[in-house]
Image (spheres, rainbow, N blue to C red):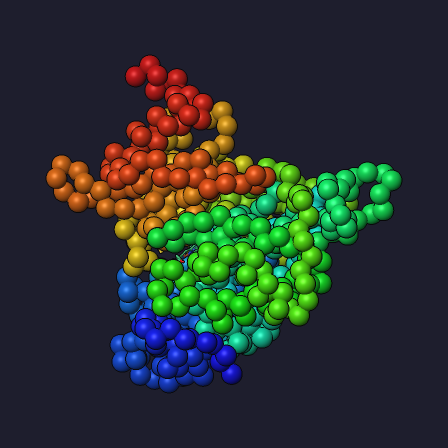
Length: 532
Ligand code: SRM
Ligand code: SF4
C-alpha cells in the first residue's frame, strides 16, 4: 500500500520514478540483478531504487557498491561487527567500513553477485539496511552512552528501536514510509549534553519535565513539588542542504516517552501526505512548515494523532557541554566503565573490525557503540579488566588519548567514493591536521569538520572550524578549495556556524588554519617553530 499524495502536476524525475515503482520493490529482485550484472541493470533501479535497501551504486568505483546499515542508537554487538567484517574482508583492498556522522556504519566494495547472500547474513544476525537512503528516514540517533551514563535523564534505547521498527516494519521494509518527499532525520536525546545535534534533525526529542498546568517557570528540583514526569520537548525542521541550512524550531509540544512513536508517525504522515514535492531543493520538512506556518503544521499533527499536543515545557534539560566520550569513564553500573576509542576520520578495515569485536567480548559484554563524531565505545568493562584493555595493541591505532586536534576531527566521505564531492576530504583532513599538530600547542580543543560539497554531510556548520569543499581559483586555474565556516556551537545552547570566507585553495589552507588557531583559539606555535 502506498498512500502518497502526489498532487503536484509537474512531477520531477524522482517523483516520477517513485510513482512508477516503489523503491522497496528491488528487495525481491536481487537475484535477478546478480544474474544480469550491474552494467545491464535498469539505471533507475541501479542508481536510485537500490538505495531503498541501503545499496548505493558508486560512479567513482563502478561495480563496487556501498552498503549503508541502520544502527539504532549506534549500538551493535561483537557478533554483528564480525558479520560486517566478514562481508568487507572478502573485497580485499576495496573493502572497508566508515563510521558515519549518524552513528552508523557504511560498508564498501560490495559486489552485485553477493547482494542476496549479504542480506541473508544480515537477517540472520538481526541487522537491517532497509530504507537507509534516498527519500526515507535515516538512522535514528541517540546518546551513545544511553543506559550507561549515571547522569542521563531517560534511557532512550528502546524508544529508538520502537521508532525504527514502526518506520521499517521491524526491518522488513514498510511501504507506508518509502515515498517521503525527501530524506528525513530523527534524533532522540536522553542525556544532558545534546550528543545527537538535536538542532540539525527534522524531528528531535530533548528531555524536559512535564510542564505544570498554568506553568510559569516550574522548578522540578524544588523539594516541595511532587516529582514531575520526564518526557521530551519536540523540535522540528532542522536540516542542511546545498540550498539552505536551518536549525530545528520548537513545535511547542511536550510528549511523554510512550507517545514518541505516535508523534513520529503523525509527523511522518503529515510530511508524506502534504510535504512539497515539485522541487527537490525545497522538499525538506522545514519548507512545509514555512509554507503552512507552525500553527497549521502543529494542528495537522494533532489531527493525525487524534488528540491535542501538550504545550512544551519552558525549558529543556540540555544543560551540559557536549562530550566526545573518548577516554575511560565510569558507568552508572558500579565497577564498570566505558572506553571511548578514537577512530581517525571513522575509517575501519576488516582486521580492525574483527579486533574491535574481540576486545568487546574479552573485556566487555560484547557490546559496541558508535558516535556521531565517527568514533566507537566499548562499554561494560569491569574495573579488573580495564588495565589489560588499555594495553591492547589496537589502542595504539584507535587511541583513548588522541592528540587534541585529531581527536575532534570529523570528515565526510569525499571524492574517494562520493560523486558529489568537489574535493578529497578524509585523507587530506587527517594529513593536514597531523601537520598542524606538529606545529602548534593547543590550549583548548578545536573541533574541525570537513565536508566535500555543500550537502554538508560532515556538518561544517556545527564545528568551531568548518571546511566545505568548493572549486577555487589559483593562478588563473580552477583548483580544489574550501569555504570556511566558523562559530558552530554544540551541546547546550547549540547554534549553527556560518560561512566567513569563500574559495580558499586547499594548497593555501594550512597557513590559514594555523593563523586562525593561533589568533582565535589560543594555540601557540611550538618552540622550534617560533625560533625558525
Ligand atoms: Fe549525506 C547525500 C554520505 C550524513 C546531507 N550523503 C549523501 C550521499 C548518499 C550522496 C551519494 O549518493 O553519494 C553520500 C554517500 C557518500 C558515500 O559513499 O559515503 C552521503 N551523509 C553521508 C555520510 C556517510 C557522511 C559521513 O561520512 O559520515 C553520512 C551518513 C549518515 C547515515 O548513516 O545515514 C551522511 N548527510 C549527512 C548529514 C549529517 C546528519 O545527518 O547529521 C547531512 C546533513 C543533515 C541533513 O540531512 O539535513 C547530510 N547527504 C546530505 C544531503 C543534502 C540533503 C538535502 O536536503 O539536500 C545529500 C544529497 C541529497 O540527499 O540529495 C546527501
Ligand atoms: Fe559526498 Fe558531499 Fe556528502 Fe561529502 S558532503 S559525503 S562529498 S555528498
